[in-house]
Amino acid sequence: MTDIEKVHKLASILDSKKGRNIIALDLKGATIIADYFVICSAGSPAQMHALYEYACDEMAKADCPPTRTEGMKNPDWALIDFDGVMLHIFSTQMRDFYGLDNLWAEAEKIEIDTTDEV
Image (cartoon, rainbow, N blue to C red):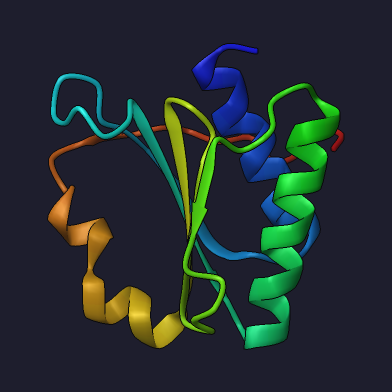
């Protein structure tokens, strides 16, 4: 699966579990961390956990398991690295606090289509 395919798959996965304010950013050439960020908000710690688990499970089924994960001990933020695509799941408050949307404001936003089947 290509990185851009991962981006669209993740957006669909998050949307199917009611992830909020899902965006995808193209960071190629801007950082060595990843080529793409997918960012979304969760309405509660339980939803964050559900989004995290479902994203990991569904991507593994698509032969793209996470290479690293971080933050699930914290109910406000989780990071999942899908080798080239990093998924950030935030509580609404932490998303506003860290402001990744603003920090990477110059990055190209990717038009995402969440109508794909998960």
